Length: 299
Image (cartoon, rainbow, N blue to C red; front, side):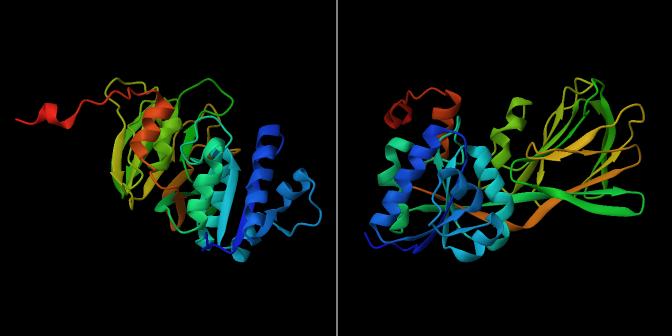
């Protein structure tokens, strides 16, 4: 195998023995083929390899050709938000639960990684969302979301009241437990739990999922991926919050505006040969794997 990636960055979720074992296996494999590795600073400190080259996650994107993430989907979300701007491909080794994004299993580590390192892989470009908050004359970037931006009640068990606009057009005024704004990547995460549709990763679309709306007619809406979403917060009797990818949210006040739109940089996600999104759905979501032969449907 002649590697097409000569400089590889490694990021791992700390605190789990299974992750540590898999990370050491990855390092051994990369060393075996003479591939130079750079460990994210926190990963290097956790593993205890003082002589390995290390860099912050932000600098990592400038130093390597490929980033390997060992952990769960949450670990890859953090990497995606930091590295999308560098346009460096990312591959995930699953040591979490579902593993929709980190799709190389530990028992297929050698075969999957060697194939990717040798240039045999499929590639997808996934987009992120960026969220801005306008409070009076002040506007600031809250953050980026690979999965979703979520408006929620915060610490209070009360419904949030807000108005929703898409590309400047009024959609509705709603009282609910909040609103999930998800990318296709995030459609299999929180939005799915809220009753949203599963969207294929290649779709250029955003899904808006109201959470427990105070009306039976409110349903998830799929809009164009280039749309601008605006939300006017109306609630005065509580302090709702908005957050990106489950990170700590920002407290809002009545009259604040939330702006959500597509981030200009995309993340390149690599998959080993044979990757199949629908197979992943069958495996992760417990769909039936029984397949009836095509001939049974031929007239």
